[in-house]
Image (cartoon, rainbow, N blue to C red; front, side):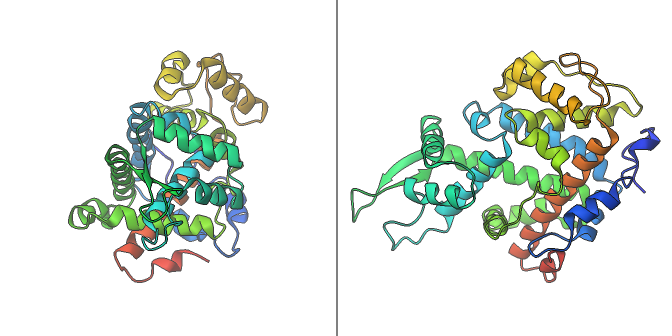
Length: 320
């Protein structure tokens, strides 16, 4: 049994809430199997992946001023996934295919991610940030495709490499960092397969409302990741503190917004003590275990997609 770090309080034993989490994950079609999630989470090296998730994801979002305005909230992250998917699966012979305003609005409406107006604004923010460029159709000038810029694709490759590093940390036998070096298209194929799972109805946060409480709010995603990493590093039952002013500047969120996230988490029973601005943050054992188990699901899913991209047999066995 992995207790998530030397000296970690016994109440944070990682399998303490497994009956709850397993029941939520269930066995409905399109759901990753509980045993596959546990295989990642219970690996001896998984605590390192929890810390790395913050150290890898933090600079990725914090160093991208425009990107951290549109990504840190969970549903907008999925919008990025589908933006790339529309571009990378386009039929060049179809002038109306690929990443257009109309196609992006249609996908966002289909999956209830955003209204047509919000989807339109999202793409324009990406254009202003230098992540997308207009590319009028040669056959019909009224149709305008949007193309990811080299700057954006370099950022996406950085994100891919971070995922491969996290997977290799949790499961060293995966060898995805080395595989990526020999197969530059691995990240693109992994993303395509992952987008297909979402299009088929998979909802990564559905079984973990504790995590969704943070991920559904601007700045909350990285706030939880930072608090979880700091809590793990403590090694004993002590509160952690986060400078909300500095954190907000890093991730484009106001101190007031971050404070409200923490206060609402306490009201929901996810923090064991009232937070004092960014001080006295005490994650409940259920929140911590939910975050760790969700991260295992997240990495197991990308691992499955990457191994399928490499043609490894049996990857689909992870899914019902």
